[in-house]
Figure 1 (cartoon, rainbow, N blue to C red):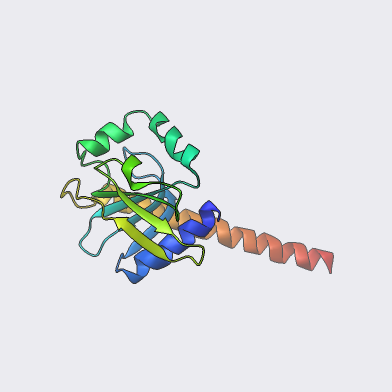
Figure 2: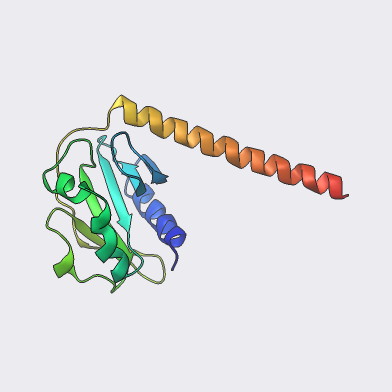
Length: 158
């Protein structure tokens, strides 16, 4: 199961759970890139850090002081944080108390092993919403340009 497969499974799950916005590979202001970033109906940010193997999880501490900031509930980070991995990859005992754990089955179903605790009650601000909107617009135009180039290439080949 690839990271992209896992992102897609999370998107379906979070969308069906009422998250209004779900973005892969998004970097909120003053934070690290999130494998999957979402905003709940109530306006709180949630981050899913995808781990494809145990070694990937063990290397996660190399992200500077991110874990310390999550542990103390830094309001620049998400209100809830999950490690997400294929089923059976991470034992719950290795997951920090400030994080939840979700597993993805081979069929793409999400299992919440442990709910993430609420780290803070700060709602997503305007700066993050504008960055998210710019990111989506940029990706839209890149996709559109890619399709336009593909269409043009097909016409040239004919």
